[in-house]
Image (tube, rainbow, N blue to C red; front, side, top):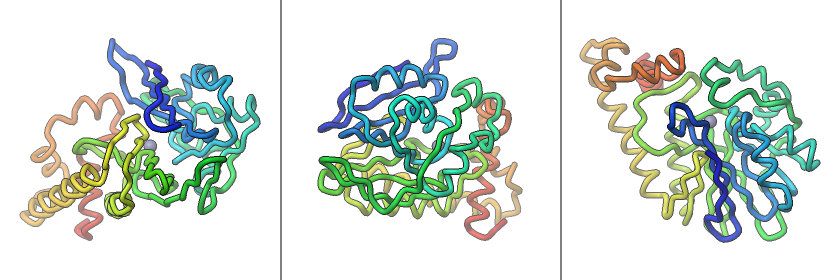
Length: 271
Ligand SMILES: [Zn+2]
């Protein structure tokens, strides 16, 4: 699946997913506004991304973080369009050597491996002809994550700092303390529209972000209670989040409910 549409003002959305057994799996999105491309999508679809951008002005790229589904067309666009790529300083070594991602088989199958590209450290803001984007450091989903906020328009490009739904599984590297702090920071911006890394365009996002923070707080409370009653993380995971078998199987144990439980217990100092 690959779709381009105008979603707000001069913002174009490129939303894509690999199809497997007739279903769209693992959506990813990039956004183009005033010549700035925010994220570059799935490596296996980089040809489509390049084609969809041909004829459109492109002056710079920002990667919200160095996960494979956000930097897929970096190399092809850098070579073909000669544009600078900006990212968090921790993301830069991964951009130049994507082997550092140590991708698992499911990631190679769904996304493919990104080719190396050269990034520059992102500053406090990014300017285009019409817009100024404040760079907001948003660790938690990954430690190299940034979001962009166009204050005068109220636009927030949140990458994967906000992922909708109630999480039942986590992968290695998710830091629930930082994720929650980041969500509070994003909520307090007072954005009018949030553009997420999975392609959702959320109006007045504070409510949804606050709901997510409440879910994390309730989950932390429930996990802590069971742990204090003597339950070990695998037991707590089975009790609160049964049915993570398929995701565990497909991701070869990358995403599990036990990792979620452990992350919450570590955050509250109970592990
Ligand atoms: Zn990510």
